[in-house]
Image (cartoon, rainbow, N blue to C red; front, top):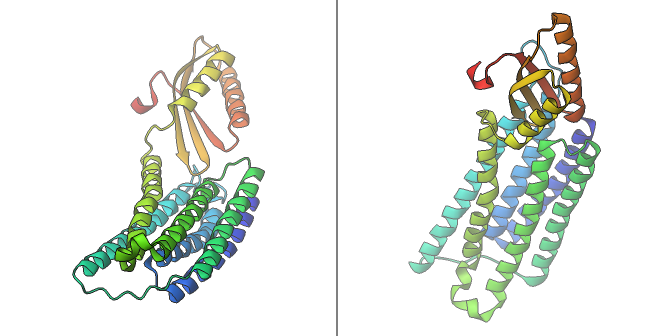
Amino acid sequence: MKYEQKALYWGFAINTFSTVLGVLFFIYTNSKTILLDAAISVILCLSTLISIIVTKVSNKKNSEKYPLGRNSIENIFVIFRTILMLLMIIWSLINGIMTIVNFYNGTLVSEVTIELIPMLIYCFLMTLSCFAITFTYHHYNKKINNSSDILKIEIKAALYDGLVTLFATISLLLFTYIEAFNPIKDIGDSITTIILSIIYLYVPIKELISQIKILIDKRENQEIEQKIKKYLNKNYSSLNIVDIYCSYSSEVVSIYVSLFPKDDISSIELEELFDKVRNNLYEKYEYSKVILILSHDKIHNL
């Protein structure tokens, strides 16, 4: 998709800026919280680059080897990115806990530098870049009727990243400048990292569960299936709709319909009727594949 590719190219440029900014501020502050924020930006930057390649491959024409297309490649990629993010978050969590343990054992040497103006500049630039990515992806996704799963995931990631950066900055400044936190000032960065890691865990875990459900073809959206069944029953009273199953792969949904005619009709009439059903479903669900199965059995029994 042309617009999806344009969005990802812009996303890569903005994520590269966030990555460089995050790395520079980590070198300046030596903060584990900034490191985690920068690491997430690195992952988003690399994943955007890979997304460009993945979308090019997945959008190739169907072939004999890939009769249902290559869209599942996008799902595999999302799983890989999610696992990578989870590993980074878990590492940061463990690192933060070990720092606190060292603090209570009296072996911690604090080298974190947190200053008000530089941190405010960092927060402003990082949240601005997150907003820019969100706006860009939303703009281009709208041009393709909000059909890109990859752009939807990236929008959520950018919004979440911006909110977490805002929280991280506020938290670091509180530990640095509020007198009540002076006794634990040296581990304020590690406490923030732990809180940040726990907050960050929600998105990749949720996404991993969602993608696994798609890959194992678990029946996910019965509401849409019932909606399709109701539509077919209303418009094709000559057909008995036995079962409907929607299988999702990236932005493409494969609609399997098990059905049979109520009365005896010729094969030519049946073929014409099937063509009408297929064409109508294609109009209702633009990015879809419709597979009609002449059967009295439910799909799981075929």
